[in-house]
Amino acid sequence: MNPIDPRILKFVSKHHVLTLATCHNNEPYTASCFYTWSDDLQMFIFTSDRETRHASYLKVQKRAAGTIALETKIIGKIRGIQFTGDVFELENNELEIGRKAYLKHFPYAIVMKTHFWGFSPDFIKMTDNRLGFGKKIIWEKAGF
Image 1: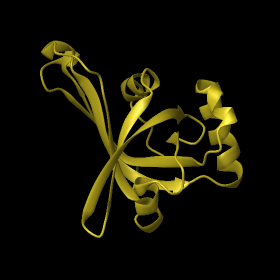
Image 2: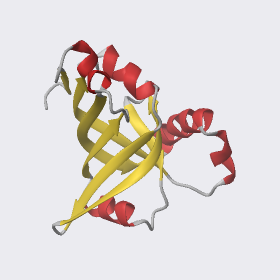
Image 3: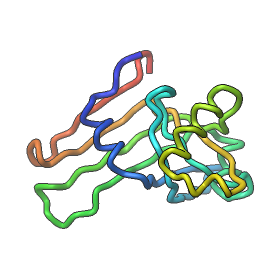
Image 4: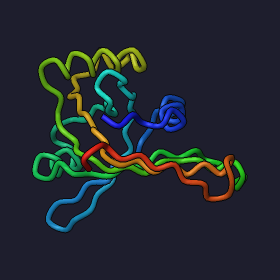
């Protein structure tokens, strides 16, 4: 697998909310989700009830997009990522690994009845204006 640029991983590790974009029958929908990144699985781990609108879309169309952004009005400090990939409900070994990673970051979630999902990116574009205005760092999964 093509390793993800460490600058992207550092940014991802410092945040905890992603915007998930789904679509089904030409009807788009977004949701904000608490996440953690799993180095072991190389994916974002988030929770969502199976009955939410975005989860119902994902049951039919696993392809999705997402964003994570640093909120700032200072142009020279703008940073964020946009990504695409497949989203699926975690099972078996991936569920054990993902659940452990998620609960490490959000221990209060242990009392919630929740379902764990993985967002496996195949493309990530990071904008980091600290490196120069509009500087982009692109990562693509090998074979994508």
